[in-house]
Length: 256
Image 1 (spheres, helix red, strand yellow):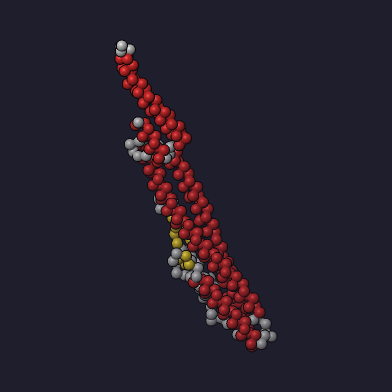
Image 2 (cartoon, rainbow, N blue to C red):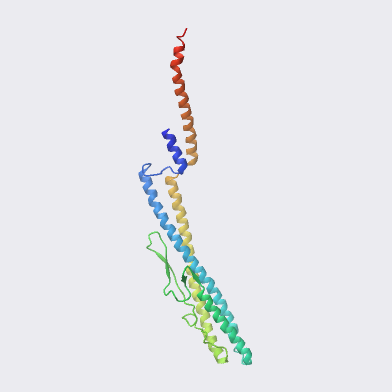
């Protein structure tokens, strides 16, 4: 009955080492690995947040880059000295609308309260890289606001004159180059984060398998053992029943 209870406990929990009394050394090792596993889950969550922040920033950055390309079309078109005043004003209106769209893209590039593009974060955000919290991966912030260090264009720029259009074109070309470089840096860091995240996932899976090897019960063997013990129990009961009938059989031999 005691052996049956032990087997049923292993089957119901799926564990061959359920506590320290079952196997103190194995249980202690498994507990240490479970703590490591919990820490790695925290790392996975941190890296997932980093991935989301980078993805949002890159999506907004792609939109900003496209808007800058559209701006170049307007600015170059405004270089035409043959344009009428009305046509130049229309180009300038489009130019200002695209600048406002860039502002909107920058301000909306936010995830979980963090924005890598609006200048609110000066040096970047550090994310956990190991279970001991001694290593970090830093996702750099890039200020893509108008009149900033990367996009030198501002709403003060105007295409109302060819001179203004020429000045805007110079700043626009510099801005396009700087934005592409900034997005390239964010993309490279996002790729590093994704690779490290994949490594942490594989490490977590390996730890889970290792813990399972230490403490998980072999359900096929335990099931077979349970059936064998149940048969032994039934045969034991039958043997006792037969033994109990022995004296009665012996007494019946002396009856007349």
